[in-house]
Amino acid sequence: MKLLIIDDHPVVRDGLAALLRQLGPEVTVLMAEGVSQGLGAADAHRDLDIVILDLMMPGSDGFAALHEFGRLQPQLPVVVLSSSEDPRDVRRALASGALGYIPKSAPPRTILAAVQFVLAGNVYVPPLMAQETVSTSDQAEDHSLPRSGVSLTGRQIDVLRLLCEGRSNKEIGRTLGVSQKTVKVHLTAIFKALNVANRLQAAAMADKAGLI
Image (cartoon, rainbow, N blue to C red; front, side):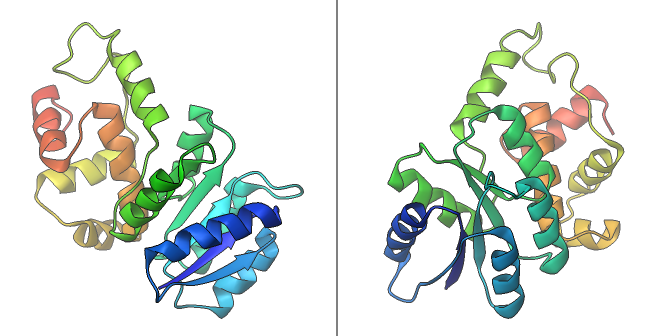
């Protein structure tokens, strides 16, 4: 397994590398101190399994970097590790192609679990977003339906429709001409918007709410 850490702080890079080596004896950790160096490493090492990116480094736009990684290696999962716990940054990072968002305040076991979760093909959303969802949904009059004001983009509706047809992520991506990574990001946004936890619940909610 080969991982790439991109962070401008040497102490953070070294500490995170030591932590990630606990994933197994076969783990190789590459490190970069900035986005340009990180993109170069990703281009040179096409066998990377995951990238862990500091969202806010001096002189760099982390959100733009996510798009760059998406263009360079569309199937390569990128996880954001950031000091920001602003839900708006989480949503924007996921919309920009990140498959996970880990606050730097998270304990080591959570960081490891989140990385493993993404490596298994999932999208990791931090508890702070789940808490926001609960707080917002508590204000809804009917908890059995999507909360008031929820809306899905046209592309999310397309993904939801194909999900309801029983299509896999690979099939959805092929039909829509997007990567599986992009499909996963759309599904995460759909689940959050519908306040559900899985595909079956999303399909049931979509049918009940007349979204498809």
